[in-house]
Image 1: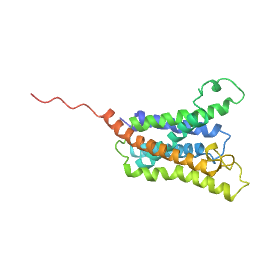
Image 2 (image 1 turned 60 degrees about the vertical axis):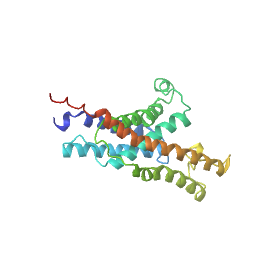
Image 3 (image 1 turned 90 degrees about the vertical axis):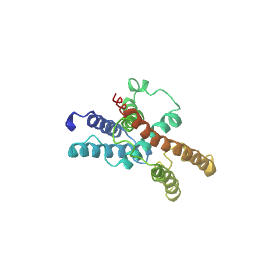
Image 4 (image 1 turned 60 degrees about the horizontal axis):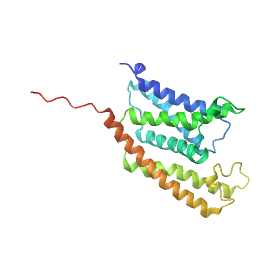
Length: 216
């Protein structure tokens, strides 16, 4: 089987296309974690497709970077659906309303791409590539994003979109409230990162071939 006939190549190409469409249709800026995580996914999976074709392999490259991309895009999907959209159904906006392009962009950025990346992580190789020691490295980016957002807002009061997300905005409830939000999110991100590693192990079990029957 050549790499061109491998489902993994076309699946990863579709992930890159989904991320690209979400970014291309969006009118948001890179100040949002959503855009940043999708840019990372786009870059990684374009690189993965190139790697697979060049090496004629079904394995994705740079497992640690792949795990980080999975974590960040999963954070994007969960935060958007639960905290920002309050669990609302995203489908009606795709077929009606004046902002259908932005609804489609949001759908690609927050739903299609995260779910496709999770499926890739669970079902496609390489397996057992993540390590528990990767968690602090993975978590440094979303936590650093939050701290840099606060520092930038304090240093540059006229910066557009000082606080891209309400849970980073101390204007009404103060920094103590923001700190509490960050502690809660940090704990949730730790659990989510651990789940990403666990899914890597689960995917290995799902793909494992049954043992051959013993010879008589």
